[in-house]
Structures are given as C-alpha cells and as structure tokens.
Image (tube, rainbow, N blue to C red; front, side, top):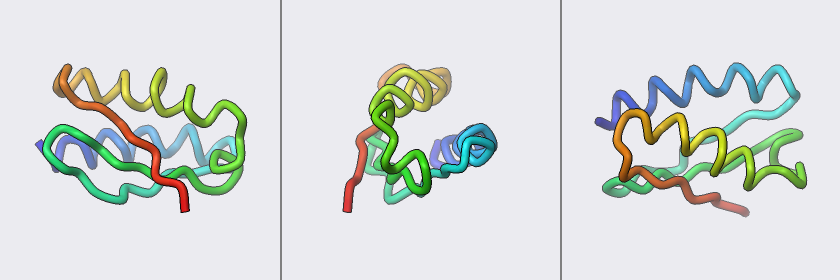
Length: 73
C-alpha cells in the first residue's frame, strides 16, 4: 500500500507545485500519512483544508481508513 500512496502523492504534487507549493512525505505509520507542506502551501491559511479535503480525500480512494496529519517544523 505504501507504494500506491507514494504514487498518488506524486500525482497530487503537480497541482501544489503549480501554485508555488509542494509537499514532503515525512512518514507513513500504518494508515496515517504524515506530510509537510512547503513553499506557498506551508504558509497558506487554507493548508489544513488542502490536507483534509484535498489530499486526504484522494488517499481515501486507496483505503477509506487512511488519515493525513500535518507536520510543522
């Protein structure tokens, strides 16, 4: 399943990069995917919406139990 998640994230990165942002996969633990948003996405006030209503929804197509957590450094 990890390879499928990584492939889906690569697809989603294109849209983020077009807006001047990007994402970094920090780790996958079970069905929890930890992501760091960078560039414009890192400071965007809609970052959590992007994670939960965009990225997480797309990953739930792989497995409905997947959740996404934001890593902020």
